[in-house]
Structures are given as C-alpha cells and as structure tokens.
Image (tube, rainbow, N blue to C red):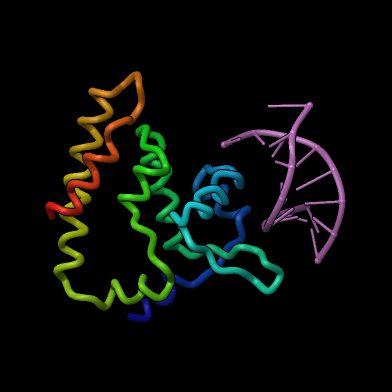
Length: 136
DNA sequence: GTTCTCACA
DNA sequence: TGTGAGCA
C-alpha cells in the first residue's frame, strides 16, 4: 500500500494547485474552510496539498460547475480526516461498494437535476442526495 | 516572489 | 467570491 502513502503525501503549495485545478486561491481556501479538503501545513503555516487533495478539488469543481452548492457537495464528499482517510482504505469492502454505488447514482441524479432545475440552480438537490446515503 | 489571515467598496 | 492590506 505504499501507493496510498504517495497519494496522500503533501507535495505542492496552493499556487501549483491553482494551475492544476483552475480554481482561485480564494476558492481553494474557501473549500478548506468547509472541510471539503484537509491539506497539510508546513512549519510556516503554508498549505501543502497531496494528489488526493487535488483530485478532491477536481471533483468539487465539476460539481460546482453542475450547479451544486457547498452544502450539497458536503453530502457527497463527507469530510474525512487524514487518519480516517487511511482507515477507509483499510476498511471493509462494503464501505467501498456503498461509496461507488452512491457515486453512480449521484451522476444520474445530477444529470437529471441539472436538466430539470436548469434556471433556478440546484435547490432541492440536497434533500435528494441525503436520501442516497440512507438508502444505500 | 509566495502564501496567509482578515475584512469589506 | 473577488480583492487589497499587512505579515511571515
């Protein structure tokens, strides 16, 4: 599992992440405040992002582009601390399956929502999303 | 030169 | 969310 270590290893500063994700520093920090990402910190209190963080930001970005707000994204990207993140990798497959399943359903739901709720933006998507996590 | 936090025309 | 201030 040395791969997970590399994947979660904090490497680049916010500047690099900005280019990698096309997000502004403001947005990246904003998402961090909402615990969508949990970058490591250097001694100088500077953020260090891992590949995982970048991937999460890309997911967040795609969701934002589809009209999902922070509240909605939080339900999809249930915040995971660095520790529990590793624990998730080692945990049972049932957890993994549930995650993949809900992701697939999520895509279908998002497409549906985006088409129907076009003008007014995602509004009732939050309640819909939460149901998937209870329903498996 | 960069990033950080905080605050707001 | 953008942007500028004042530090580190």
